[in-house]
Image (cartoon, rainbow, N blue to C red; front, side, top):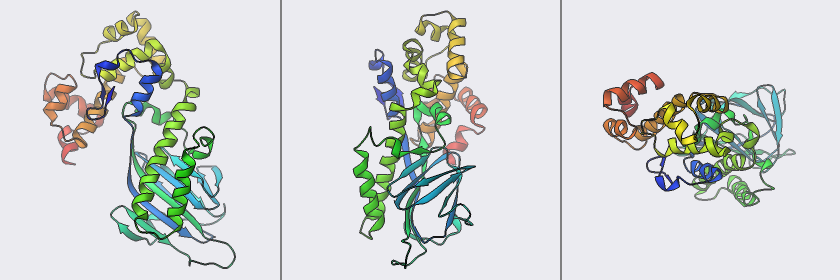
Length: 325
């Protein structure tokens, strides 16, 4: 099974099927809100978001419509729609394509708590066109063992593509619409938690029913022989992995294994091991406050110095700087 405390698999999972490995890897996914905004605006309006590429951006339309523009692409979001931009980036929410926009950070907002604020730029009642009500969240997005999937995800993930398969998401969206439209006690906390759950459900739904079409990493997991190697590396990231050892897990020669691995995942076997170790190290140091010696030992490095060199070479900073930063 996947141990959320350590971030790795336990040996009891060695006989798991490829679909079970995918389910276990999903347990390492973390979506945690950094900031949330409830927005009420009257057309015409344009709002620009410059979300850091290391974060995801979630938008829910409690009362629409609104145009989402990302690059040259535009799509209309209707009332009840929710989208997740897993890699963030610059994008706009508009009442019409030609309207001028303002940076969301420059719009006056009333803080309700540390990470939740409200923007209200229209009266409660308007003559004619009703206001647009939005709920947006900037989220820290960590896929744990599935981090290679992040670069393969679409720029915009739409909840509408999942509702027929996951009808249980509809009550959550309806609850978000109610909480975003009513000034009720505790709405900030309820909205933010619902947003986290809906965003995570969007990712899970895409993995379960959509991402097989992209090939690459997820297809490697579904391959019984390659999937066995990947699961073994995640179970024992501190093992002295060599190409020969991984080829033995797959039951093939080193040359055949290395070529198949690189063709499927776009990275060398040892490069994959290093990437996994550095992601785990970052999580253990920054979030779990493990000592650097402890992390070095868990990940199979002979000394703290050897681990520190590898960490700086991979991430550009020392483990000590990460801890104190």
